[in-house]
Amino acid sequence: DAGVIQSPRHEVTEMGQEVTLRCKPISGHNSLFWYRQTMMRGLELLIYFNNNVPIDDSGMPEDRFSAKMPNASFSTLKIQPSEPRDSAVYFCASSLGRAFFGQGTRLTVV
Amino acid sequence: DQQVKQNSPSLSVQEGRISILNCDYTNSMFDYFLWYKKYPAEGPTFLISISSIKDKNEDGRFTVFLNKSAKHLSLHIVPSQPGDSAVYFCAASGLNTDKLIFGTGTRLQVFP
Image (cartoon, rainbow over the protein chains, first blue to last red):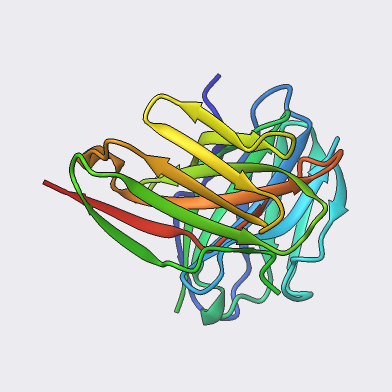
């Protein structure tokens, strides 16, 4: 298996634009997580899906953030409109008992 | 509210010596604890874990200790090697859930 695949690896966008981050989890894993890494808060859990259903989205910072998992092999995290303070590295992870992370998307909002 | 805390943002250790990374948690419902290691431009990778029914788990140079009464765990690396230089994240989860709560990380630097 290629592991958790995230795209794009890097994204630079202007404030106010919509940003979509993508994730392909490891086949057979039933849980998927979106995390955001910042210096101040470390790895912050944004949302957690189990069997494609959002279980806990209490970490989603604002209504500007939304996440979907239409099937077991794909998830998106969308920010609309984006703001400079959203700049961070966003990680997707999938799990079947132990979490495996993708390489992350470094988002820069200017 | 940070449920998992790593109060030392950085640690510098000489090669061959012991590295001790600490982690505290506040939620008594956590029953499974993990350490992840992260290199620059890569995602975190699993290193070692411990269940709340144990107080120690060892894997080669890495040992994790759990003190439930103090809500504290630590990762010992001995002997430390330059390749161990990375950011180490402590994480915790509760019963019947895969949900992982991470700390803020400790950057370990092992120098020759």
